[in-house]
Image 1: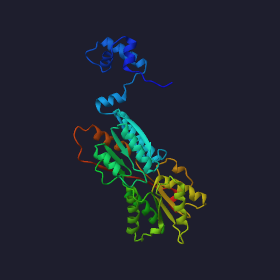
Image 2: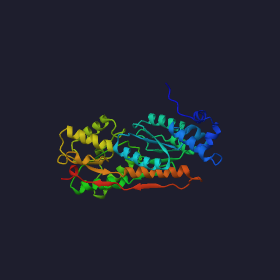
Image 3: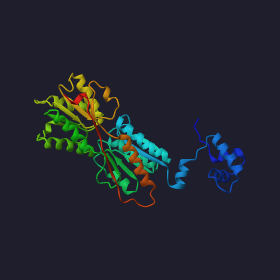
Image 4: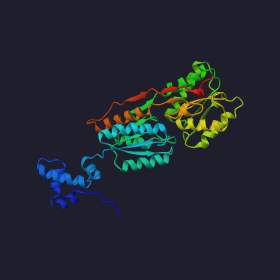
Length: 342
């Protein structure tokens, strides 16, 4: 049997009233007596009546819903961002539709088609690892869909963006290795064209340059799906271990790459930090329980989500066209543990 939600017609029929009387009572109209309003509202509550969002959206041109696109909900960083988004959205009466691209541009496109067909009021997105053609998102932006980017942003779309200081985070992590006398510091990154990859690699290279260490491109490896495909991470790790001069330290530039690399090194019986020191991006509270305890670059994910949601609601609810946009850049936290120091 198909579920059918209670309607105004159902209330009117049960109480022997007109639909217009019920409708005005539920809107708290002064035209309806307090006794009648109470009678109608009590019955509506008893049958769990809820206003039809489609009808409301047609009337008010708003759905009070926002779409969120992340690469993977199971990723601790993204789940914390989602918590931050929801903390602001629900407080302001908005529903949140959460989706995951799984680093697939085709899936991301399908998600965006679905969300826009649902007439969302706005979009918060961190683009997929495969996405290098941003024309569809540009079209949505040009059609006046409010969009806020976070983490993986698109530089040439003029809107609000929320990031962390990726450059400084990796600069400090790489400098930590250098100060602990590591000489051959390798990096495993996500997709090369992503904004976060470019910024993080820039921090890595600047730290080397500031300490008169030449950049060795053979020590830099990429995983186009950001660690979601274990085979990609294994290929990157194996390539580094196959070098004649192996790295003695690894800075890992994405959350999933960090955990997968740590697991692979353990399976290969590579001691950390004795054989290879490791520090990487990760927001899991359990990294301190790893053996050895894992050094991490931790992102203020909840705050990123909350700020992204606040900025989006400002766009949605602004009475005038917004022409000035903010780039919020939050500081990461470097947590040094056993895996990265001698």
